[in-house]
Image 1 (tube, rainbow, N blue to C red):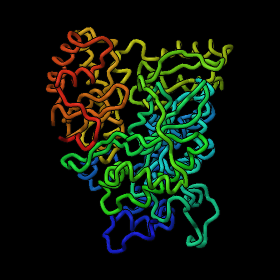
Image 2 (image 1 turned 135 degrees about the vertical axis):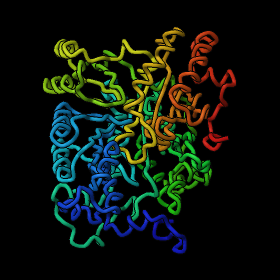
Image 3 (image 1 turned 180 degrees about the vertical axis):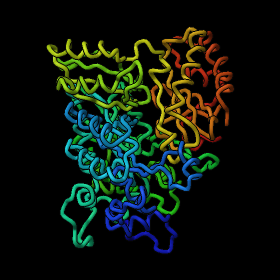
Length: 568
């Protein structure tokens, strides 16, 4: 079954019609960029623009004032730069820094999918920004939209030969699953214009691409730093005798849901089987085509691959995959995860040094008393370090030779940039999405609010003697799940201004969903709810017991390992 054989009598979601008529993602984007009378582009084009790696946004802090002045919203654009495996050179970092200063809001956001993100770019600068990204040998195609997004993997390919090989697989999968349309080069890079788009062909996606976004990540046990169970396709590296031999495949993970709609829920990916490493790219392609052909195109709230897997069942998905491959996936191999966080400070691997920096919520900026952005620019200009973006929104300065380590350490000391050693285990394991003022979906603050909330929670941790206890805590401004909150031991999902749903009990290894504990609460109730739990945890926890495991053992919340039980 392919896109063209779908039942023509079914009423498809409006987005399907937009994609079908878009001439392979062109729409009227090019024309809209030239319109000087507005800072916006046409509504349908905003949806197509996502496939090119950009969102149109407006400053929600200014909405009311501009409305009173009878002005259009303060429109600007976000660009997300595709960086497979999060690996960037010092030259690329310098160029990203230049773009942030020249065209964006002066900051760089490191995303939870190991990508660069810029905010505040005006329409007149959008094309120039894209061209500057291209000059850095990077791009933003497929960083958003109903296609395979940036492929994640372990953040440091220099950690070992195996990690280096894994990073190469992330790049191979990402490149293989890119859209083949010439629209990106035509619109942004002044590529040769296709006279007749009827001659174009998308061999993997078809003319309407996927029903929804699709995420792939590769994990290397014992670290689950990419949250492999949150991925549409998760590949778990199987290593024997210090050699990568293949991957276990998990399918159907995803974090997004909608408040008040129990038919939507976060889900943990299910184990499908094992494949030799040489088959990994082919297997990913065939799974993507299953979602292309079986995914729900009538209701976008049910269009993610997790719902396809739940509807068909894992056995049916496996049978369909085997048929498309022409061979059977094998029985899954043994593996074990121990943690899903970053390892901070200096580490050594393959004869080189690597330094992991803690970057709160992934926001690289200069502020009074902490010139992080300036420091990283100075390090990049030495050309003695590569820059690895981690899935936890942190940064690894990697591949540093012994003779250059002292120079890098001098810059670190001069600017006092931190590896998080002096922070609590809670802060080191925290993540937040952007939310206000630019995200149009945000219901509550996230990135701007979590640091102050953490400071108050840390007072409780100090009282309980839990300063060094590693506890994962995540916050999002809406239930779309960008910071993967449903896997955290403590999570806050925005419900309205200053109000959050509070969830407890996720697995520290990223292998279990959390559960709603309290609904629609503000800061006072958050702190009053957490204090007795944390004090009780400090007194009653078993040896090496994580907070998420403790609240389940004590019956405070139920264990959730299946998304369809999330709302029960």
